[in-house]
Image (cartoon, rainbow, N blue to C red; front, side):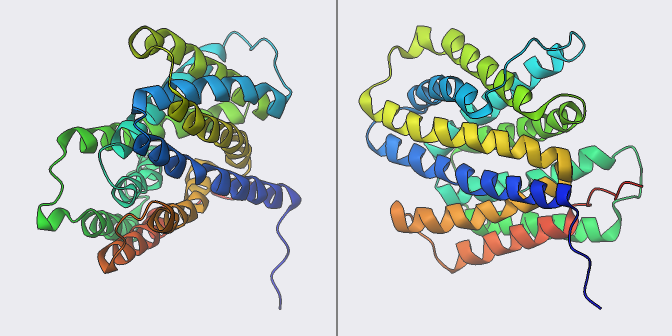
Amino acid sequence: MSEPAPAPSTLRANLWATLALFSGSVEPIAAKIGFRADATPWQVQLARSIVAAIVILPITRRLAWLPRDVTPRVLLAGSLLFTTTTSMLVALSRLHVAEVIAILSITPATVAIATHWRRPGSLGSRFALGLACSIGGVVVTTGAFHGRLDDGLGLACVGLAVASSTTYRLTLERLASSVDHPLISSWVYLVHGALALVLLVPFVGMPPAAAWTAGCWTGIAAAISNVAFVAALAGLGAARASVVMLLQRPIIVITAAFVLAEPLGVEEYVGITLVVAGVALSTVPKPARA
């Protein structure tokens, strides 16, 4: 007997997640190309933030005043996104794409831990096995057991990106249940752009051409990816949407090997496979609604 077709809302959520998957895969590659043209991560972040804030409204076509009780959470979400993207860009400027992506891939597991911490024992042995598999994959991919990882700043930035991304996804999940999805994305990226102007312009100045090229690609891709991801969150939940987004990891790593000629050997293949399998195993799906 064949399984029933997915409910329309679930199908739409999966389509949104697919769009977020492919648009988000553009960012690390474009950023790396910008770095190779002597753009700094701060310059790329400034250009990216400005571009994303400009294009978000034509994409969402939605802007209105937020309810007073929601405004602080939207400001928090925009700040967390700014922290995540800045940390990721700095890490990408110092580490290989495969290393950064492998570490970032444990984010769904941290989302699951944060989601279920109030129910001790609910994660169980399956979660522990998956988390161990994911950590092992990170170790293999980054070559940590060979002592290759000696860039403390790069590692600290990836760790910060994981922490801020985890909080960001949980914050968005709560927002998506009460506020129009396009409206959330509009305000999140306007806050993101405002923070970039205030915090980066006094120190970075006007980005050069290389940074604007990378910023245009990453900004447009980020805006599309965010709108799609917020919509996916509403239908799938933070944990399940994060698992779907795991497919982005091998896409980025393989693309980086071909476009950027970054090393991709047996260790990277094995490691990223372990990470994807481990997080898929460890992440607890969102319970079905009655």
